Amino acid sequence: MRLRYIDRIRAIAILCMVQVHTAAIIPPEGISVGHPIAFVSAAIGGMAAPMFVTISGWGIYRSAIRRRKIDDNGISSWMYWIIPRIIILTICQLLVNSALSIDRGGRFDWMTPGVLTLLALASIIGPLMVYLTKKQRFSMMLIFMISPIIIGDLNGNDLYWSERVSSIGIEEWVERLLLNGTYPALPWLTFIFLGSLIDEDKENLDNQNMVVKVGLIIIAISMIYSFYERIPWALTEGNAILTFFPANTMFILTSSIFVVILFRILGGEEISGGEPFGGDKMSWLEPAGRLSLTVYVVHFILLGIIAYEMQNQPRLEIYDAFLLTILHTSIWIPLSIWHEKYAPTISFEELLRKFN
Image (cartoon, rainbow, N blue to C red; front, top):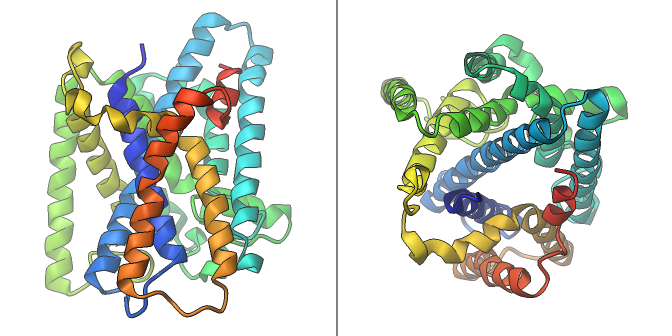
């Protein structure tokens, strides 16, 4: 049975990602890193990717469980499940990179590993997760969460953006994929294992409650420490308690806690057989959630066109940039509804479903 609140979480995640990517391509004039609008935009982006990866981990885990029940006859069966996912997600990543290439006014090198290659890597470990116990998966999640502390400077803390999104040769590409790219396996696989745990713990909320309470206490302590030491609590990159590039342990912990809280809120009573939060009033979000991968790829193609046309052009005024960002973010809701009604079989999601 398809859970409606999962589609809503997917929709919120992808729309938040569209918003922050659009804001990055058309930043308004006079907005500095410390401006409240910049902070809100960064906060939205900071939560969007963890939501997107966690919900993907949830889906990978459930799909792998279905595959095991249907046909658990060894490695050939799993290869039929794994290889198409790696190919499709990697091609999607290359499309995104090419659409928003640095050479065309964008942000990426065409070979940059990103969030979709992270999901391709997660597809490889999907079969492993279904054979691990809940405690083993929780332990793996914690190991990935503290991995930035373990690997130290290997996380690319000293890399410029142009270095983080480029890779010369296969060795450096693997390094970006695993250690110091935009979404490296260490520590972003934390959210894949979190997704598997959320799925299995949906009817045992006491465990989630305890984890959330402990996490919130740690977050509060980090805020107090930030205040007294006069260190920024959160920055996209730089010297702060939480950083996104590279993602440090406190960022992973904080975003994980808020992802769990969001799951709890939007799940409403659906887990126990009732309605999700908001009932039918929020059903308009669901088509965008069911089309999240396609929206992710296609919105980058549109942004790539915008980035190319805006090269060497002056920045927009704040109100113009704001309106364009809101328009580009919101337009995917009616487009997704239209797509589901008139072209439901044409999407990357439909292609992936053929190999479930």
